[in-house]
Image (cartoon, rainbow, N blue to C red; front, side):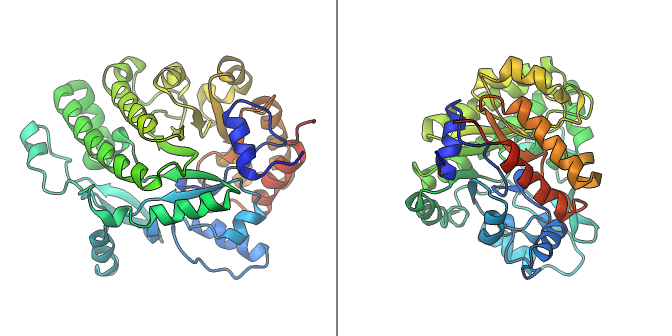
Length: 387
């Protein structure tokens, strides 16, 4: 029997076998499509090649808000609800002089390092190393600003009344380590984690407190109209962890645990945790602190490529989301390469359920539309479960 998209997603979250593997595209940046790839896809589909809006209403992010017509073409089983930046942040950036940095609500400057590609490269706390400097930082964001959340109740209630797609809440960057690295620069903050741990801990705690205030308002605006909540922090590098598991368990794990516990106390949502790279060393920790869905399962990174072992060890504890390689297969492979990779990943991670098909992070600008559609078509072909 064919399920609705939401029923399909809920079956997987309950570790039951659905009618087919759900397709998870377009809920946020980590599951989205970058601008040029999106325009190429629309052209290939015979649609007008323009962008109607951007995720988080943030053009410099480079990730379109995927239109409903395109989501239907891609058979996505989810629909995202995002927060916004404060109205003052949008006004400041829309009136800034051309070719100048974009400043986010934390005071981080994002410079254009390639045409239409912005990166957080101005770190306002790069020189900070004392608790007084954190106390006196003038640009901590106002998480009580109602313009961040005003649109959320209506949007979530509309999706709930429709009751067709799974509702995915995607607040922007509830990720303490990544925030700290943006504020200080990655190298600087990672050095502080080891050599100045009291300062590093204080910065992470400040970020956590702001994230919890933000999350509280966002979840209240959603009410019960949510199935999945996207959180995360990038803890993996290409061939291993970004920080040692011991350091993670001492400093960051309690912070992640508190954020997840808060979310579960204030929402019925399952926790989707995004962490790039080889995070195999942290998977037991993720299970322990309440992660329900692991994303993006970066198969090109270290031990994350051993899908059979991941499924064997964690298939009853975690739902996997991702696994379709963007670095090589989607970007430079042929449609047949994509088709075979989708088949392979579904056969392993999708055995008896427990898997959402998605690309590893955003579908990048290099990915041709034929490969995006090959991924989706292969999921529809190979992702069917026997009655």
